[in-house]
Amino acid sequence: MSLRVLLVDDHKLLRETLRYLLNMEGDIEVVGEAGNAQEALDLAARLDPRIVIMDIGMPGVDGIEATRQLIAQQPEVKVIALSGHTERGFVDEMLNAGASGYVSKAAAGNELLNAIRAVERNEAYFCPEILQMLMTSMGQVGAVTEESHVSSTLTSREREVLCLLAQGKRSSEIGEALFIAVSTVDVHRRNIMNKLDLHNVAELTQYAIRSGYITL
Image 1 (cartoon, helix red, strand yellow):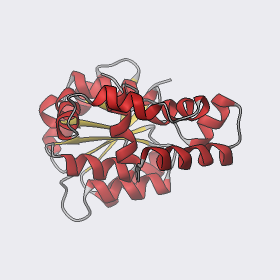
Image 2 (cartoon, helix red, strand yellow; image 1 turned 180 degrees about the vertical axis):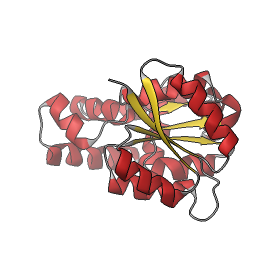
Image 3 (spheres, one colour; image 1 turned 135 degrees about the horizontal axis):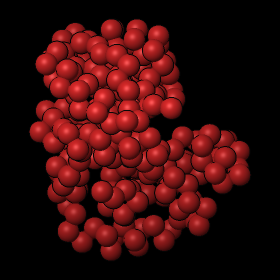
Image 4 (spheres, one colour; image 1 turned 90 degrees about the horizontal axis):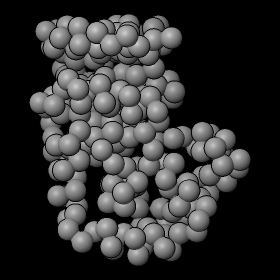
């Protein structure tokens, strides 16, 4: 069964190029294209894609708000940001909106394919340029030792939950994997946030990068 993908970008030529690239893969099918947020939401509801490739800078409602609305509308959909914006603020906002991956337009091609494969496995994915930016902005030098020390404050179960969260899994999926209730997963998530002084999904993902839970 083909992996159903929806392309969202206001540049028609780029969409056509991506459609050609993705349709070359035997297990990927581009089921639709949208040039703006409202069209993306309408097509996603009608076509039921598994993955949405989302531009950020679009006229009207931007890709960040479109991602937030899309995931509220269809929580099972995975969103990959494909953007010319490589600043940390944009990455953080897309992660907070619910995106599972972030690829620079300059790295489109194999990196986009890598991202699609990763998020289909319920893993987060960042192209090397974005990952390097995150590491640099967080002061990567010496961070692994520090993070390893902080992680020691977590229980073994909390580390298991953190690992699964870092892979992009939802509370229901984590509950099934660990044979615990969703409410218990949410308690562990809150405890992790409190112990590590994290406040949102972006910070959790960045911590996971520093700690080695997310790798290229």
